[in-house]
Image (tube, rainbow, N blue to C red; front, side, top):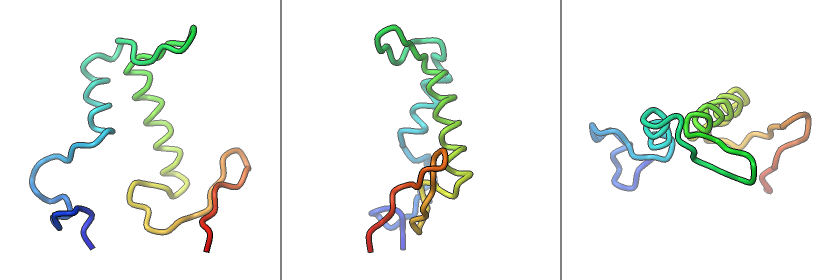
Length: 86
């Protein structure tokens, strides 16, 4: 089964447009520019990219990813994660 509606499976020879790619490109271009301001907390594009990479690494280390085909129970700080109903 293909991952894309056009049946190409993403092998069209051009880079796929996605939010992760856009985030990394923006962070590389303007890492010190403020991206989020919430009260007295401020995060730059560079900080957001680093935090996003750390979260992705954490999730990947627990078996989750953008192409995870089977649902797996996982936990955060010892609490059970969501479970799929049968």
